[in-house]
Image 1 (cartoon, rainbow, N blue to C red):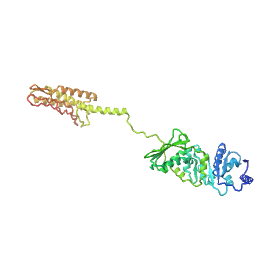
Image 2: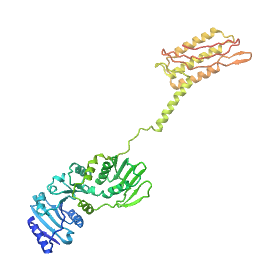
Image 3: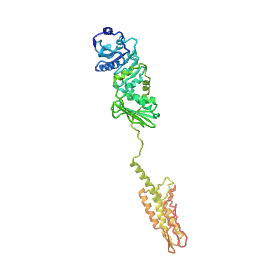
Image 4: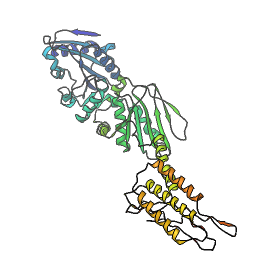
Length: 468
């Protein structure tokens, strides 16, 4: 039964309620609390009333709906009383406030409160910044909000954290009851190992996903990553990493979840997204402060938002091949030029190799002109010419490629034209063209080594040393 009372007062509404009770023969009310719903007048008002009627079947109560109408209209109070089948197991009073009266909801509610019963305030849509300081919130022992119904759910959840007071709760937290129970029961099974890390994925604007990640971070004291799911609604996936493996609870379709644990078969569990009436009925079961919800709000700052993996410094194959070939060219040039060691910063290794090669070539020609008798004067002259050639070419600047080619040609010529001395038909070819001299700090290229050490017929050795 629905009774309309247009342009009325709270006193007339109260009198009508008493009259209806007497006509119905009800001696006692049997109500356990007063539920005050604060919303704007519109189509969403009926949705909130329907949810309250369903919850009243578990918690018989008086429902007072404060529907704020147009602020620019004349001050007026239109009331509506619903009893019987239109009110579930309660009685519903709808107060539509217009004009300046829209901001005086608490004054209109106080005369209609049930005596000696708790008061619960519920904002099904937009809630005040600080519910505990709102005039209607100050009348209530419990204050229920819904961050998911706000325009910016994540920002609204941060506001709940900043303005929390004992007695506050949010339906985004109530929607986690089944998830929390399932994860807690999974960890109660062996092996009883410590969780090292966790990850929770869901919609980007899902406040329940943030609260679940914060609850795990505070309860397990491990780093928890909150990431955005590629598909699905609400909470999609929860992964708990332990030494024996990963405990994972996945709900891709918003209806049925799959729980997988190491050493156990996969189990399908009911994880249907909860209706508002179910969440409201659960919150009406307790009227004391929710300490677990408070700790979850405080742990919101501990969760790690999903980020792309950090880029590691890797060397591309092309660059690695380029550096490898350059490194290979250096030993090749050193081998062609000999065992030269750069003792000075003034001359390069390639230039020293070229100078040493030319000096070795001169030494080779000196050795080839040496006769069997092995005159020492010729050896000394060759040595002098080699030394002067080494000194004169030390300051020359040649390209690296040409120096290497010249060094190789000179080395081959020195080896081929080394002096041969025949003693009894035996040709001694011990001539060694050593092109690897030491580059002194003074810019002298030493071609030290045995340049043309051919054996003489008389058994004597004629050595031509080219040095600086």
